[in-house]
Image 1 (spheres, rainbow, N blue to C red):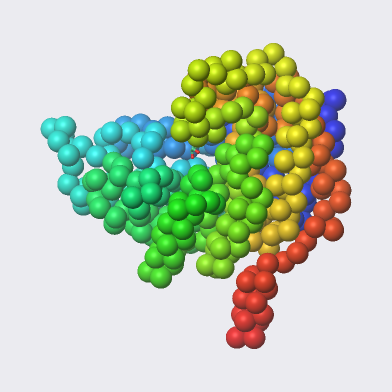
Image 2 (cartoon, rainbow, N blue to C red):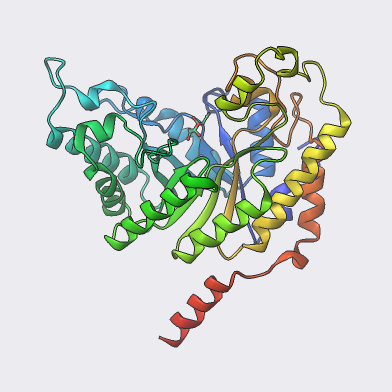
Length: 372
Ligand code: GLA
């Protein structure tokens, strides 16, 4: 590829797969800049939207696989792995899953059967070719007085859909790595609830292999110590950890709640409309470098870090939690050029041999299994 440095994925080879999402416009051939960057620098691909239920089965029994097939084609050509995202979620799932012919709430067994059918068709089609699946997305509640998030699935089936989703995925591809994926699960009460939730699945022998920490973070929050403790706690359950949707926002207001506090200071909400100041770019580069140092330290537990997007111009964070801001969360700028954060990671990759400290819970398990 012209004008581009050596592939960033090479800097982490043997330690981490470096992932990116491919958007609908990339998969339709309209965003050739993103496609070229993805092919050159990344070796794990997730569909940003194309493999969500609303895209794969918009009407009952009418599967639309063209974009997902294209993602697999690109991945095969550049020897990348594919992460299927996401089988069961309360968003981007068509209404038909939950209603009967007369538009009334469908029976519990009907909804469960539709879910199993969706999973077995989708996972079955890509058996052996999609190596990891985000089976279940975002079921833990953000509210302190609530455990599970009330959602359409819970309403339709009770808690049964949770274990059933993993069982159906495992039956369709026994070798695929099955992931529970969520945001903000590294800190506070949501972390504690997630540990409880995962433990209950493992105790019930539900086939779950990894937890996906989404990683929609900013320049300071969460702290490295918080993330490290979460990785240790998840690893101690015997699960792998994937960083599944990493981006580092440079704007205020990572959570909607933060925005209320900024009311009356609207000019502060979108401070870098025209350019990212060098000082902020450098700060972001340091943050990326610190995060990846931590991930490399736990490379026995974390084998993939996926960025949610390819370049700043197409990031969802330009429109969330406020529409129409100018954010700079990724490694490439709006012209597809590598940023300071990219160069920091390249540097870190070159020095990576010094950063490996194995987690004690992982090494003791390995000793135990070697002895057994
Ligand atoms: C969540 C989902 C992703 C994506 C992002 C925002 O994290 O898991 O699929 O929709 O939100 O773009």
